[in-house]
Image 1 (cartoon, rainbow, N blue to C red):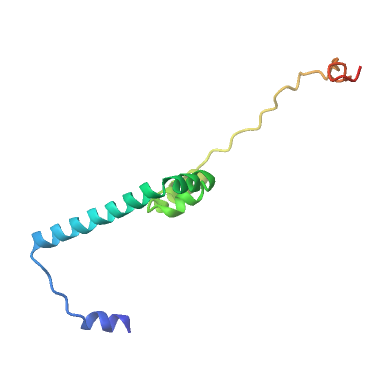
Image 2: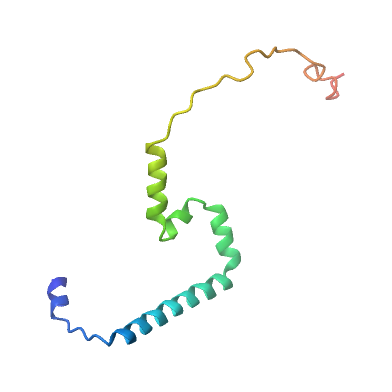
Length: 105
């Protein structure tokens, strides 16, 4: 049904330069609107971005790029070996463990 309605809709094209000028004007007005809303709600926008780090990837148009890079990094990541650290350490009791410095006397 939508395809039939679309096929029956008359389309009137303007000359090329008028179309380009109109599209640039619409894009500039959209950017101006977004910038003004961002300026008015700066605190809320910054707080949201700080508190919801994962949501930033869902809001922007770059979600596809972000997801593709993340998928590629996970898919082709080289697993790192597990390294034991401090195996030569000795468990020695100190005066801190007996509570001398904590007021335990």
